[in-house]
Length: 118
Image 1 (tube, helix red, strand yellow):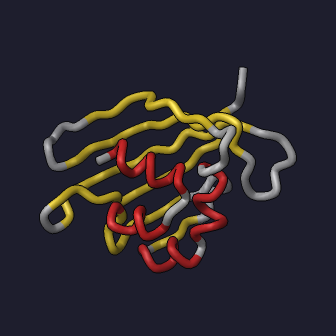
Image 2 (image 1 turned 135 degrees about the vertical axis):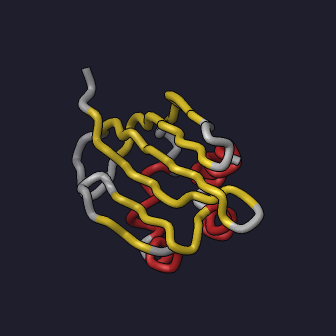
């Protein structure tokens, strides 16, 4: 499921991504602003998720934990991200929390944190 979400994110297709988000999902962007609900994320899709769909942006799954079975936490490191008017490319860590939602797992929290490059 996580791989499908990341592939959808790279393809920049909201219709493909929407089913991954729980209805009351929370998204915290790299500046700390909180967005609540799938509808709000859809309205701000370009601002929130387009930085991760660029050709030169790459990602690496740092870790994932699936205990208990109905919760998954994944940490993805994104390189060469330009977001929010940044003039230079940077690294972001995207933490995704998936939890049971109806019959499947869904993203209930997605948080992006800037990472200082060494």
